[in-house]
Length: 159
Image (tube, rainbow, N blue to C red; front, top):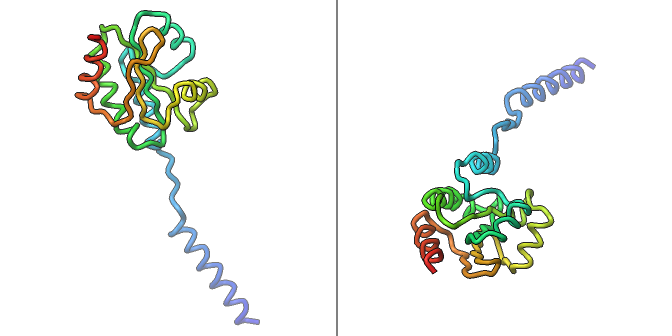
């Protein structure tokens, strides 16, 4: 009887010690996806913004070149490229250009964004589509730096 009681007490002590010292740590800090979204939403640029149908429709009705940048919050290429796109857009603040970051197959994608991707036959995230008068004039699927952005946008705006 004493041995059984001793085994139970030792077991309880061992389990308690394990739970105290080896408890999995919870991370309450924002994920890189959360911080990337927060960074994007606080960017001070008037011509590159999160996609909304109403602003997209307004942009199409204007004479501006429209860039649809398809972005997934889980995509490492998208996350790496986004700061360069933001920096590039700042170079074109006063130009005839507006861009939208369109969610693509991620937790933030809405039904209209899914339809837009289907309508434009977007094969995967980090696809960039340029529109003039609602018609596609250029498409890129490679990762861009700020310099790539400036070069390609400059070329499209000069057409």
